[in-house]
Every structure is written in C-alpha cells, then in structure tokens.
Length: 399
Ligand SMILES: *Cc1c(COP(=O)(O)O)cnc(C)c1O
Figure 1: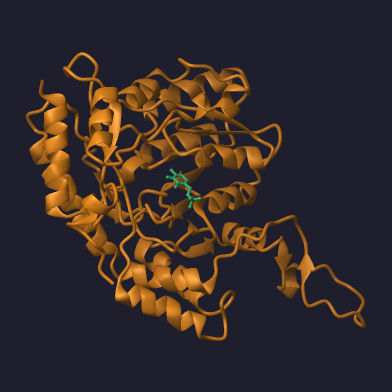
Figure 2: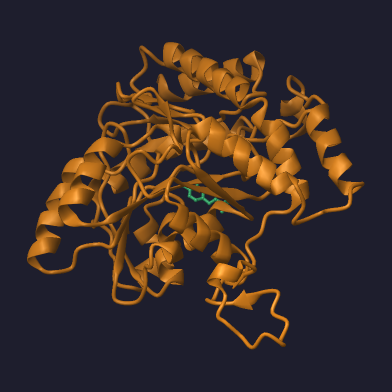
C-alpha cells in the first residue's frame, strides 16, 4: 500500500513525522492474525534476533513501548529509592519518568549547544560536584536526540571514573552509526533502548526493545517484562516433589510483552530500515542546501556520528534572525504544516516543577526550546511537499 504523497496537503496537514507501511507489512500482519499465536509465538524472538544481529548486540528484549523498555532497564540495573538517574532535559518525558517508576529521583544535565545532546563537559562538571556532596547518580541516560549519537566513548570513560551505569535512549536512532558502528551494539553502555512508535524510524504500532551484551541483564529484563515470572527451573525455589510448579513469580514485574502481530510488522519494517535512513538523509541534505544562506542554524553533525535523522530541527536564533520562533511556527500552521517542538525541557513540565525544578535550571536547553522548530521529516515526504515547506521557511524568515 503506498501512501498519498502529493495530494496529502489539500486533505490533511503535513505531519512532522509518520509511518511508511507497505503491502508486505500488511500481509505480514495478516498472516499472524490467521496463525496459531497472536502473542508469545515465534515472531517476537525472530524480531529480537534480527534487531540484535543488525545492531551487533548479544541480547534483545522486545516490549510494548520504549517507555516500558526504559523501565525494565532501570529495574534490571537495580535502580531504587534513594538513588538518582540523570538524563538530558531535551527529551521526551519517558527518559526521566523511568526513574520515578522505580522510586528513584531524577536530575538533568544541560545540553551541548551544537549537538543538542547531553553536554559531556556539563556532565563532568556535575559529577565533580556530586562526588563532593556524596550524591553521584546510579544511572545516566544519554538521549540520541534527532538520531544523532551522543559522545558515548567520553560518557563511558566518565562512567568508569564515577561508577554509574549507562542506558542509551536510542528511541530516535535505530539505524544511526557511532564511530562507524551501529548504535545498539552497547559498546559504551549497559543497555540501549529503541522505540517503534509510528513517528519513529521503524514501527510496530506501539513497541520498543532493550538491547544488551550482558546475559544477566537480559535475563532480568525478560523476567520483568512478564510479571517477574520465570519458568526456568534453575531460577525457581525448590518445592516438595509432589507439588507441580511449572512457573514461579520470583520478583515484581509488569506485563510489558510485545505481541506477535506487532513483531511481524517490525520484522517486515526491518527489511526497509536502510532504505528509510537513506531517504531521511536525502531529505536532510535537501533542507541543508536550501537553508545554507538563511539566518537559521541547521543540525550540526558530530564527525564521529551518522544520524538516522528522526527529526530535522531548525534553529531561529534570537538576534540572528529578523523573525522569532513564534512567527515561523505560526506561518507553518497557516500553511497547514504541523511543525513541532522537540522538546520542552522535561523539568519545565508542571509535574516536575512541583518536585522543585524551576525555569533557568538548564539554560542551553531552555534557549534551544525557545529557538527551535522541527520540520516534517519522514521517508514518504515528497519533493513537492518538501519544496513547499522550504518556501514557507524562506517566506517566513526573510522580511
Ligand atoms: C518516543 C520516545 C520515547 C518513548 O517511546 P514509546 O515507544 O512511545 O514509549 C522515549 N524517549 C524518547 C527520546 C522518545 O522520543
């Protein structure tokens, strides 16, 4: 099934992101519907294996969302009350909420004004302070914003010195590369998490996955994904021989399982992952060229990285541009283009402000939020649509 591409505008506004669904995806899902297993069948392990192989990780645990994957990742690392998780303020709330689910607290490390990812310098400075006050984090969650990998090697070096664990939030970034290798290989982290929400790089409707090279973390995450239940005799407590125990609940987990219907869609989408990334890179290159002479900042790429281009934010710097973010944003909405903001700093959310965070806490993240707009970016965006988006940017910025 091909999507409407050129006529989309008259019918519905251009979204900032959307899925690409093929005939092959549809038949993959339909064949599961007619099979013996809608869930807990063969498709979930097959999907896990394909993603693990693609990324070069030893283990993969598929779940019903990246939010769930972040939660079981924190549980597997033993995060709990009295402990802290640090992440970037410029992310979706799920990167921080996972700590609160575990009864731990959250803190934020400001972003790098060039990559918009967690700043390694800010991280190091905060670690130095935290060591002095005896409140080092147990877990740090770098977020590969827009699909551009964070400086993982440097963060990993700090983890050795300061003794924290690392969960990469790669919700935007399946298919991206760091130092020439696929993200998700966990070379510099304990666990990497992907999202398969429809706006992300590949989709399963809702869905996520946690990858690791550590067999113990994989076993724990599998157990937390399904109520904390195990059917593995070696993990079960001994019981009288005349009682039948085919499974035991040995810890408190959740029902975070992915269905076979979702996994079949994911397997089918994986066959086009490289094609999706290529298309996104072409769209980014066209935007880069079109905006080269405008007073806007296009996404800077760190030389060690190869982005999956989940998002394409343009930055309308106060002082450089004759127009404000608000004026450009409004111009898009009148042109029926649903540009978006990624992201409001997490700690500015009312729920977080109620915990004591206040405006001004991470100045770079706040400035980024005030100046940035995410343009539409998805594989089926047509040249005509992209041209009209580029024209809207030009007309709204050049006085
Ligand atoms: C989308 C997203 C999530 C959550 O993903 P779900 O699969 O929707 O739970 C987490 N972190 C980031 C950075 C995201 O963009």
